[in-house]
Image 1 (cartoon, rainbow, N blue to C red):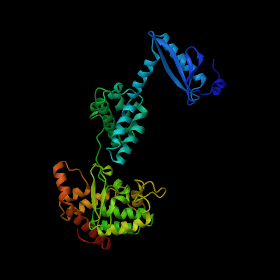
Image 2: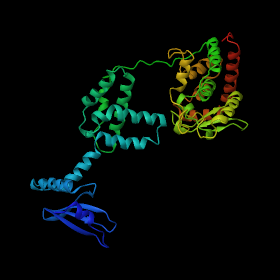
Image 3: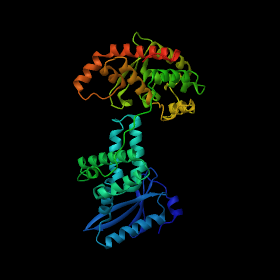
Image 4: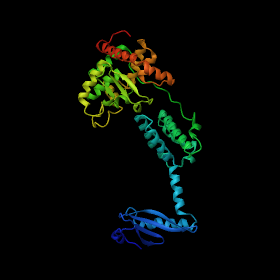
Length: 396
């Protein structure tokens, strides 16, 4: 029987050679110095070899234990190599394995924030309960149980999103022949409906004027201050704002703009934000603060990460605006409401908000033909906000 001392003393040779331990267990010494445990056995008249690990990661004691397990299978008429292959197939068919494959594909399709949420939902809310189970053995009742656990915490929308993610994984399992059908289809109506709540927003001209003056008086971090001002004037989604990079901006051309790549957009289509004179001036000022890095709004703690998703909302809270009055997302509602009241064409407003256009032909036409209108609208919006900031009693 081999000892640790004998194994450590074994030197590589020009050709691989073996050291026997007994009962089929050998240690293969390769010319590169690696030492590999092997179990040699016969099954149905054929000689076979089973890999048991690498020394010293797999100790002598552990290698003998694995050999004895293989011998017990042989005594029952089971081929250890076929058993291992079956276990690998079973491991590849667990819900988590299938979900990880699906995530790998989605990473290039989903916006970064959406992908991150999908990973969080699966890893935190789903894998701990059904992740290690074969996907074809999971029942609708199993999924319902984990969804109800989320729902019982008052997280109704999160429960619905978790069901959606499960369904996407099961449908991927169907097309890759790991399960028969999407069992979450049987859960329609099983969860309490989500009551849609609109993002809190200031829309009255007097209150908008006061909000803008409060922003100008903000005494927190300078990057946050610029984020508040720019959020009001550009009304993009909070995630799009905080992930902005300097390489996406043209501040010197005749028609300055921000070109947001499709990978950062909710609808996965590139988006153009025409920049007003006011916005260009602020961005040039901000460039003096953060222009040495890639991010327009870097975190206070790391230039490699953007400000957090709560930064703008927390700044609003510090200014006295609770989450029932104004949110970072509310700047979009503020602009949409006011611009519609000012008579701008709804299509132009929707295009600038980057809402989905169901008719793809019409969508392409609009994006090609309406940029001049959008540019004029964005300048009008900045001018109007400046008026409101200077005087709060203007008519609607």
